[in-house]
Structures are given as structure tokens and as C-alpha cells.
Length: 158
Length: 158
Image 1 (cartoon, each protein chain N blue to C red):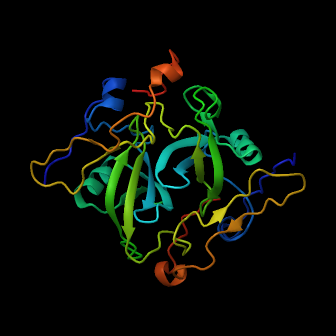
Image 2: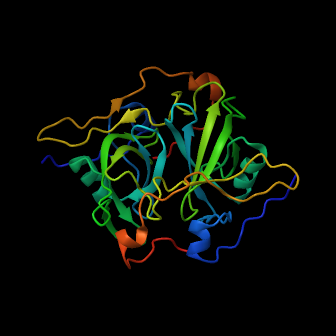
Image 3: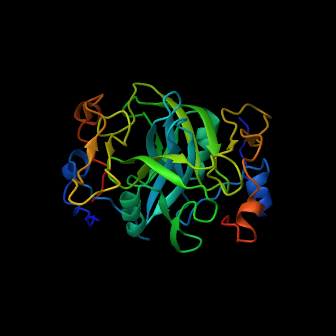
């Protein structure tokens, strides 16, 4: 397998206009990742990669994140079976954000059991006395998290 | 105009399963935002909001971010005219990420001049000796950044 080497960031011209892959990781060594369903375009989740998971994703063509709560590589689907097959991988103008277009084995990406992590909408354009409650956009869970994850700790933090 | 009050984060059940809007801002007071084209589903950009820009977006129905480089509210389109009209606003399971579905006046969202900031793809599933160069997925810019932004400093940082 080819070793993957990132290019050194030298100029705005190089970063924005060239074909050099020169990703920028933040002060914690992470880069944000947006994951969408390849067919529907729906945003499934937002996660992070460190350098190792970024390179592993490129190598194996499946989404590998870095779990901030568990502080280790997170090859999505290894516990749940909900593997994300990468169909396209893009990077943004200043190369500090990644977009993955994926097919999901099992059809769900959210640990709560929904297809997308973004299963609720926020009302906006509020008028006087309008209700501000979130609205559920997915009515039913795809899977039962207790059956899939058992007693594993919930990643959501207060 | 109704004042917008976020709920206090009390339990995982409340955050994941209820209709309470209880967003989590990070140690810098920011929440990441994914912005997609309402019709095509294409990811246009990834930005950040602070509490003030989050509330302003809800109130006016246009995307208002917080610019980390300029350290101030960034009502997208005030310089370029490329205003983003919010069609739907969603929040994720643990309420630490926002997804905006928008229509863009002028059809472009990227300061480099492209429709999407994610105008290049990363080759993946590499074989021995394969080429690792980024591939341009948008062939032509929608606008000339020099004409739109003049001598304003480029937000891309090395």
C-alpha cells in the first residue's frame, strides 16, 4: 500500500488553487468531517479525523473518524455494523474541513437509532409568541440502540 | 420580536429525545455549522456560529455566522451579495452541530469563486504508486473574487 504524505502548507495559492493535498489539523490535531448520504444528499453526521484516521479512510475507502469521547480511532460500524462506504471524499478551499459522501450499510448513522443525527429541526423566522420547540423530522428509529450498543457508554456529553 | 432562550442542558434524555433547544457551544463559544444547497444537497461550506449569530439566524431566516478570522458576526452576503436564505435549520443528536439548508442568491458560496467550498476531491482507495493529487470537480468559477471582494484580506490561513 502506498504511503500517504500530505504536502506542506506553503501559500494561499497552493492551498486554494492547486492539486496539492495539504490538510490543516487544528490545535487538537483534528479536522472536522461532514458526512452525507451519497444518494439523498442528507447530512448524516458531523465528526472529526486526526491524521491517522484521515489516512486510513483514504486507504480503505470506509469512514474512519477519531472519537473525542473515547480518545481513539473510530472505524464507524465496527460495533454497530453500520459501516460507511466512501463514494467520494472532498476537501474545502482552505483544506480545514472534509466532506464524505457515503453509502451506509444498514441505513442508519446515528447512535440514537435514527437515519441521520440531524433528526430534529429548529423553527426559525420567529414571530411574537411563536413556539420554539424542536420538531422531529424522522418519526421512527431505524434500530434500537440498546440492542446494538448494549451497555456501552452514551457518547453525548452534557 | 420574541426573545430566544436556550434551555439548560440537564440530561442525555432531554438533549437527544426531547423538543428542548439546548445547543452546546464549545470552549470558544462556537458551534460548527454545515451548510448545504436546499435543492441539490451539495455541501456548500462549513462555518461556525456563536450564541448571538445562532439567535440572529433563527430570527431573520438568513445565515449569520461568526468569523473566526475577523472575530465578529458574519452575515453572509453583506459584502458579496451571496446571501443564504435558510429553508430549514436542523440540530444533531447531542445538539453540538447545526445543519442549514439554504438557497443562495447568486448561486455561489465560496470566497474563491466556486459554487461550493468543496470544489476538489481527494482520491481514495489508493493502489501502489497511484497519484494522490486533488481533482477539481468544478471546472469554472462562478464569480471573480477580485471583483467581488477587492482588496479585502483572504480568510485562508496557512
